[in-house]
Length: 150
Image (cartoon, rainbow, N blue to C red):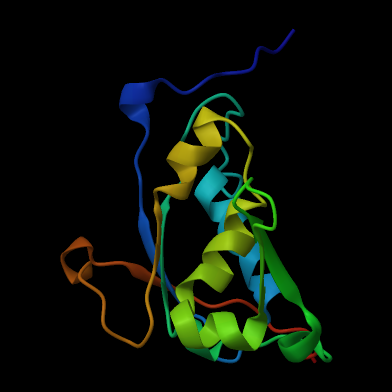
């Protein structure tokens, strides 16, 4: 009978990837990035270990929404005080801090526990092309857009 081999913590190697979000759909980009942060793209994926990689996302302000979500989608936050409900549309959030759009989308796709919080720390989102992680020599990741696989 075959046994499942588990990877030890000392054997985990974390790679760095860079993704250009310009022209990408938020949901499709987020699912792929969350998959990489969890480590599900690796053959030695172990659910209880954090063997995901680091992901740098540039051009976060150029990410796209389908349909009328730019004006209709609303982000809610409550301060837990009476009358403390805060609402922001995507357009307003993009003006205030465009990185929060992708960060929130990806964070909600990760596990809601300590491991998910640790995996989320490996996400680095930036507005524009510049980022401080050039020394890590990240590999460029490109995702196939829907309709481009013809």
